Structures are given as C-alpha cells and as structure tokens.
Length: 143
Image (cartoon, rainbow, N blue to C red; front, side, top):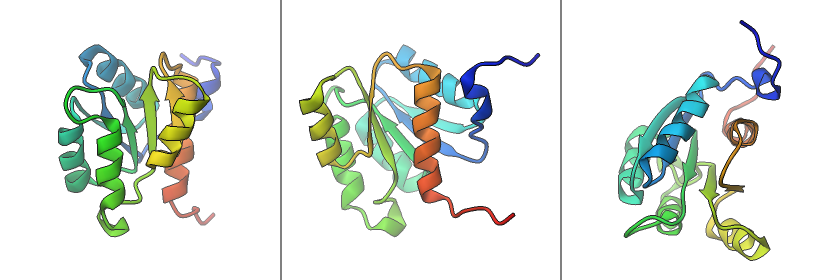
C-alpha cells in the first residue's frame, strides 16, 4: 500500500543513526520513525552510553536530547567534538529538545550541533534533518 505523505520520498537505507534520550517512550518513537524510513538505529538512554556507542559503532548521524540526568547532551557533544575526526569527532549531530527560542538555538549550534529540532517532532522534520546530515558525510554517488 502506497501513501502519499511527503516523507515517502526520503529513504534512509544505509544510514546509521545513534538516538539518545533518557525518556524511553520518546526514544522508542524516534527510533521507530527513523527505522520506518530505512535507517539502522541504535537507541540509548544516557549521554555516557551514547559516547561509548559512538566510539564503538561510528554512526553516520547523532540525534540527542539535551536535558538528561547526570551528563546531558551538551556534555555529549563536547566529548564527541573533542575526538579526532577519524574517531568520530566530526559526526553530524542534531539536538532534539523541548528548549525553544533563538537563545537556545544559538547555544546548541555553538556547542557543536548542526541542527536544533524542537520536540514534539514530526516525521517529516526528523527524517529531513537526518537525511541532510547523512548527505554531509557520504560522498556523492557515481551514476
């Protein structure tokens, strides 16, 4: 059965995404949205777990909540950006957060994230941002 929603044109096959959110239901929904569009998803519940997973799995894209108990998304992106590029330090990243407004957007971008995605997120927005970030790390296909 074919639907005609705008996200049907975006296929994330071959894209690996690391999703980080301490709230299980949000983590599960975000992972399911990305998997629906073909992405391979690793979903974890803490920034520390995410940092270990990133070093081990080297995902194409990182999508992280900011406000988590203990170490949060700002700590995580700081740790990631401190890595050499060949070890994951240049991993494209989006902050998925309830923090809104220009001052939050500016601090998120200054911290090292490329995108600020506000919660609640739509499928189209999430998949679109992940697709854009994945394009930045993939060489153009010869055709």
